[in-house]
Length: 321
Image 1 (cartoon, one colour):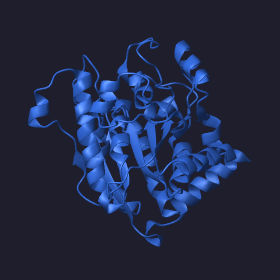
Image 2 (cartoon, helix red, strand yellow; image 1 turned 90 degrees about the vertical axis):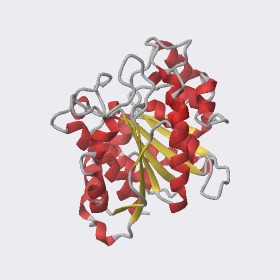
Image 3 (cartoon, one colour; image 1 turned 45 degrees about the vertical axis):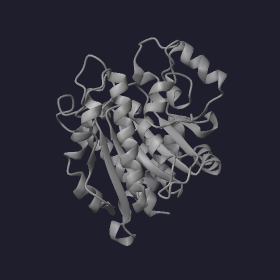
Image 4 (cartoon, one colour; image 1 turned 60 degrees about the vertical axis):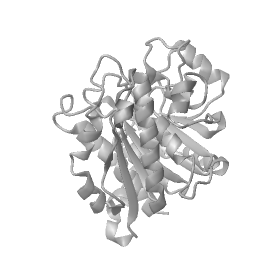
């Protein structure tokens, strides 16, 4: 029955109700291609790959209205002189935060197309003040097959991409966090994980130590009462919620070419329904899509379509408020 209920709800939220039946949802899309990875090209093509699907047209078809042309983050001339992949990523995230704040005057749902999960720092920094400059409590719903809660002392791989939530929480690499503009760390009570099923051993100990709040893949598939309860309770603690998705959370069949895919994930339709549920809450105002395999790894557009399903889910959820 839960699976049948899920399918029916997806149909209601995403397919059955025409976009014209709702007021237009204002949308602001920002691409950040800087991921801070070493020994690879500095600028990721992942954000452009999603954009190239005809994103402006699709957003309109789903009932969204872009408040300005899709933004594309770059370092300025002075920043271009700076060195270090991690530092340059942080500088780009500071620019990303500025772009997020600039868009807030239009009261949109903000959609970030990210190179990878390190770019969540810029979104969090951008959301920490409202359009009038008032400080806000920001909540993070982090949906990923991995915890990204490692520190340099616990990581097995050494990848910065396995640390951004720990960085946001103030547990490591403080200069990176502060460079992005996130001067105050995110309290642990403002973070909820979803879909996690692959942790490094010491990272798993950190999950236990901090008694992290999380919901499971099954919660996503069933749109469980626990999932809704966690989102509602987070909304009670914060002023604004950012939902961040690493595409490796999905069933590997939907992210061909992703080198960190993990079995047992939800379908993009399942996750889109869960995102719609989250965006029904008026405090949920931003979505990030990270690590979508680009064209050279996904020539048939499977992962891109999965990402588009998630963006559509956010818009449909906002329509249902």
